[in-house]
View 1 (cartoon, helix red, strand yellow):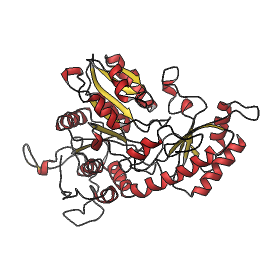
View 2 (cartoon, rainbow, N blue to C red; view 1 turned 180 degrees about the vertical axis):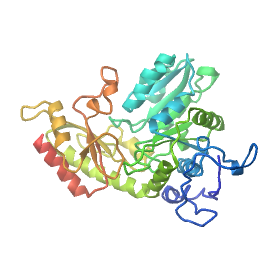
View 3 (cartoon, rainbow, N blue to C red; view 1 turned 180 degrees about the horizontal axis):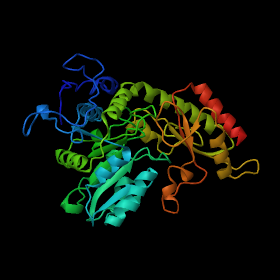
View 4 (tube, rainbow, N blue to C red; view 1 turned 120 degrees about the vertical axis):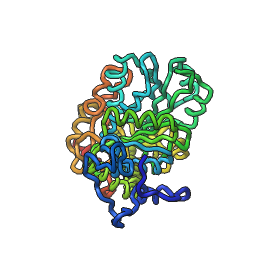
Length: 407
């Protein structure tokens, strides 16, 4: 990994400080506090086979991308970071660590695009995915699901869209002595998109690989599509870097700059997202026409999250995502009310994606998770997913309540 502006000793820096400074050291040549964007596809070499500073071709490496990769590694407490053109590209690259005939165990509530890739790309290539509920007793579930062909365990926590939580330390313990494909312990991959490194650092808990759709909270402004991977395993980093270069699904320099810029305000945004989400979740929980509310920060009442204690132990923030289901009312079914709600909000925009400063609403079964229809991972048709933004909490609560009244 190229390092033209060495990060220095940061072992004692808090995540909030790292978010501002990781990968964002002043430019060595000019002192520019905002580093330049190296908008170039190739680099002049000092001689045949002698690239200057190791830079030769932008698919292989670019100084702007290198800054992002270092920043992600530092934020996740990892040794290596890699950036990709999208979260899906990051997922696909990590999945290429599997070979035909091998298996992966997947937590049973994941992003619809992840499920689609595992089922419609990997499975036809001879890699079987087994979906398991890891939220209750991870060790027992892994003991029942893993076989001698298991190469990887893929976990989302909090999950998308049901907001299940998985005890990562329990998963690590459940895999410690397990022997899978190639006579090795299965690789533990954690999708940390919903939590962000400000709320949860899976590598410190024992994960091998962390993936993010950087499109979401890391970039934070709904203006770029990007993905990132972090790992402290040198062997996996070497293979992933080879695949990154060979497949070429890398982000452009300006995209990397946008994610880096987003990281500067990540601590402020994550704190505000979580505070606003807690307000919205509490308001929903107080409505008699709401059948279910799922938010990791709800620790009491009839809608208390079943793993609120785990959220308090494993996460610094409960996150900015809230899922809920309306009850039938006014002669309308729960599904009809869900769709009417999503079409009647005024601040929450009806759109896919999440993690931007603006609030978004969607009905996953008909939108982001349509690919799982008819499968064991099918999402309830009446479920609504909210990405709670950083607007004023009073306005967001008022918007949710008026939309419920109209539904």
